[in-house]
Structures are given as C-alpha cells and as structure tokens.
Length: 180
Image (cartoon, rainbow, N blue to C red; front, side):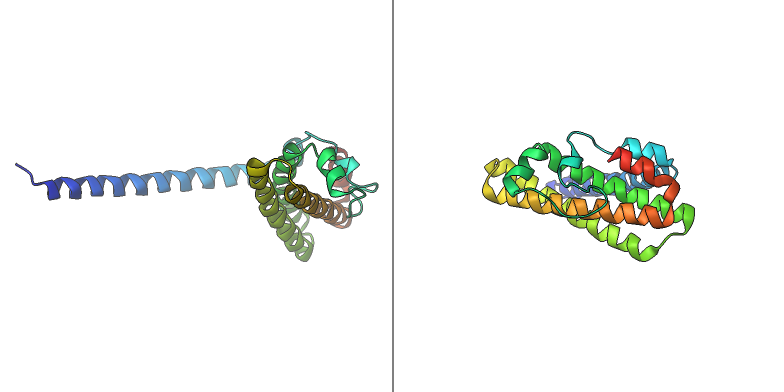
C-alpha cells in the first residue's frame, strides 16, 4: 500500500507538470498572437480603434494638439465614464501597434516611437487604476480626477501619433485622423 507521502509527492509532480504545460501553452498563444498582429494591415489596425465615445469633444484641436478644454466633471461626462476609460485603454495599445507598423514600413523616427510607448504604458496603467477605483467608489472625485488625467495623456498621445504620422507616413495620416 502506498504511503500518504508518496501520494502527495505524486500529486505535487502532476501539479508541477500541469503548471509548466499551461505556461508553455500560454507562451505559444502569445507568440502566435504577436506574429498575427505584426502582419496586420494598417486598415485592420484602424478598425480595432474603439469608438464608444466622441474623442473630438475632449479638445478643440484633437488629435492635432494635446490638452483638454473641460473640467474633470465635464471630461467624465464626455468620455461616458468607465466606458471611455476602457476605450482609451484599448486605443492606447492600438496606437502603439500603429506606430510600430509605421516604423517597420518607413524606418521612421525611433525617438518619437519611444515617447509613444511611454505614453501608451502610462495611459493603460492609469486607466486601469481609474477603472478599479470606479469599481469600488463609482464616480468619486478621485476617480474623475484620474479619468481627467488619463484623458489628458490620451490627447497627448494622439497629438504625438499625429505628429509622428505627419512626419513619417503622411499617406496614413488621413485614415488615422478619421478613425479618431
């Protein structure tokens, strides 16, 4: 009869093998997804921009200049609350993919690409923080201020992306502005 220690050892080995298998499967999935994304067309990426709210209401000159023309309360209403935060979160990732695409196709300015990477990372981080705050306290003053901050960074990233395309891939600029 096997001892309880042998049974636990066997169970631990099975769990370890299962964990390694799951990590390996996730890695394969991640690589396939990255490969698929790197081979998308410009139009396919633009279609992925989330349009659940009117980004043009954030600023008079969106997406040409950064900055907001609204208070935190007005911004919260204009972005439709958490729905707009989620859209900015998703769109920041798509804009980064668009910039990577432009660099691959044109050999564009890598310094501006790094600025866009930083912008996207910050937008995604602060948008998640604001959405988590919203889950716990609905639309508190702190959540609205965080959303205002995210929207401000988002207009900055859109302005940087517009500048990037204007300087490096002008043919792609009209479709980007129309999608925003």
